Image (tube, rainbow, N blue to C red; front, top):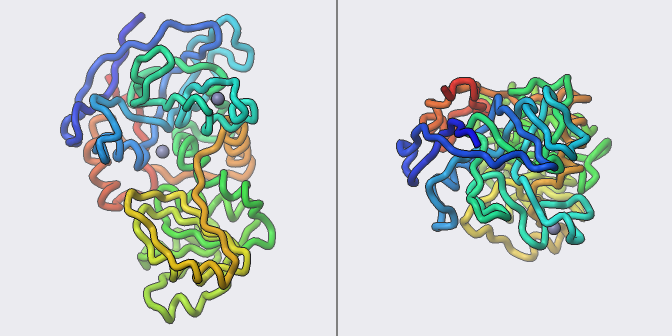
Length: 348
Ligand code: ZN
Ligand code: ZN
């Protein structure tokens, strides 16, 4: 098995990233080998490198927004051929037999899914992600990237895209829906596009005046900065669905005021800090607070097809592999428009 190049963090400091070599498994009958062209940088890459709450183990080769070209297929693979444009997202295996796997909701596998990096695979080896030259993945977990999507721009769809598309579809957002998106960052700028293309009227609840024009460019018809009680009162009862993409502790009682009766407040931006609210804030609206996971394989492919049909395009800033530590710091400092994507040809 040939060694390939990769970028690895040895401990929680960003300056511990260094070039290394790793070994991918030999191709199994149901595997697809992929030359990685691009990999997006997601907030959860950073969380794992930082080793939040000791949940994660070092060393780590991160990366779960992978796009590339098929370089080889196993003998049983029928859905892919060499040269196909493909993507790999958050996970690369599951039991395939439990009720959730059978329903195409592999993210909830009762045996536990195998994440694309920093998780024990079924053979016991710790998985290594997309900051590398190639990857070998069971065909069931590989996605087709439609021709009309740019391969670099498609990378963030594999995590940020499915994370935001899944709740919008699950809660049947469409024509007539009034949606508010909290935060216009990596997740938010894609959520606005999906909600708009699904037919909803979208308002961004942001915190910086300089993003107003960009929110409109992504398809928002409103952009509001809500600071005090009066601001929140002004929009009371206006939104059927609020999607929170900001990974911060919120004054939930304020935001719940904005819901219509039976409205839904959904978190996709997650933080370790506990979120608190008063039950009566929900009682008055009979509202729902929920959290959304990523999607299973069928939903992820549907998301890619929808993005291609409606030209949902993540706005990316391309970087080289050695820019990763700086990019991590810039994400922490909220200095990214809107998603970093690593050009993997720079990994020499
Ligand atoms: Zn992610
Ligand atoms: Zn399963």
